[in-house]
Image 1 (cartoon, rainbow, N blue to C red):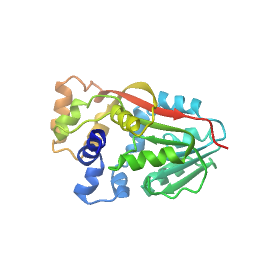
Image 2: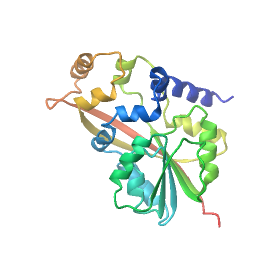
Image 3: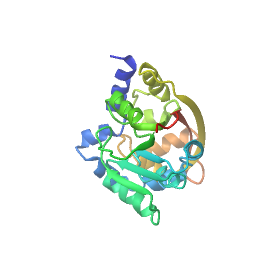
Image 4: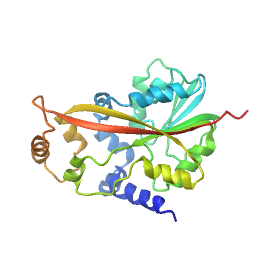
Length: 256
């Protein structure tokens, strides 16, 4: 077994939101219903920003895009302006309901509530996209089907940063992986993906930061004091963040 695959499995088990589902015995849908400010937070994070612009430039107009883990439509909705059809796949009915409300009047987005890589897809797919949605222990199965089903290209978006010190403060030291793990796994599978990095700087009101860290063993007061003592909490009670998104992609001529 690949050391990178083993590291990925440990990473998912110990650090992803999937562990909260198991620890609290809740469904994927319940998790996102409780995190009802998620879409609002995304809008304040300058996400997806430049990486969306790059993907929009690379896909062919009129193509069919499968957005795996589409969430509330951060990519699906804007990509629908270029693509002929966007299939938004997500395991949370709640997230897809938010997407549908936001996409009011857009008629080329299809939503499917299911998980990847098990979802049944009958459409011909030109491009697959997974943006921060590869939370699956069997990463080989996840990536293999993404690549196999795509006729024109595959896009993956994942973190390129070291862990935020706030994570270690809130949850204790955890395994950390970035896009280079996925790149290594893809190479072991025989695929060389291009890499581009897109930095983001943003500020979040403290109330949203506390919502993000709602499962921390630290109290809200402890988190606020930590951010104040490290100089990240400004006078407007907003917290400074720096993040970099990595875009891994491969393109090929569409098969007839």
